[in-house]
Length: 146
Image (cartoon, rainbow, N blue to C red):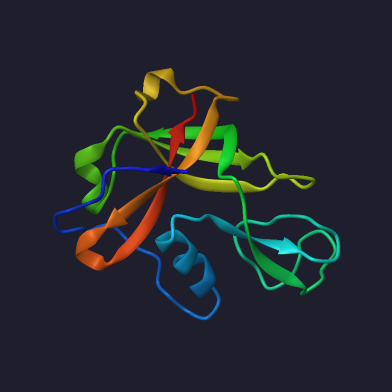
């Protein structure tokens, strides 16, 4: 588990909107635990959460902790951010493929701590948790895994 520096000042970026479909995920983030829906029938992991398994269409999904380890599946460099993201451009938004299988589980997040010029496909990643003290919330980012 990687815990990044907390956000201590006013935070103007979007945070997860707590609702009945994502409550367990948001609570997991606050414990610095990354949870994804896992199908109890076929065993596949899924992201983004959906009411049914994308492989077998079962609704027997359980929020399950994963390692947070991944590799860069794809990425883009944002050179013109909007709103609260404008001041940090350029920045990287990466799609990480979690090591948990059998079905590839792709998670999108900002990649921090590595210059955008050094990011490449296949690079090992790890989920990093960011506590947002002002909002009593936690969010996540990708960091390069050593």
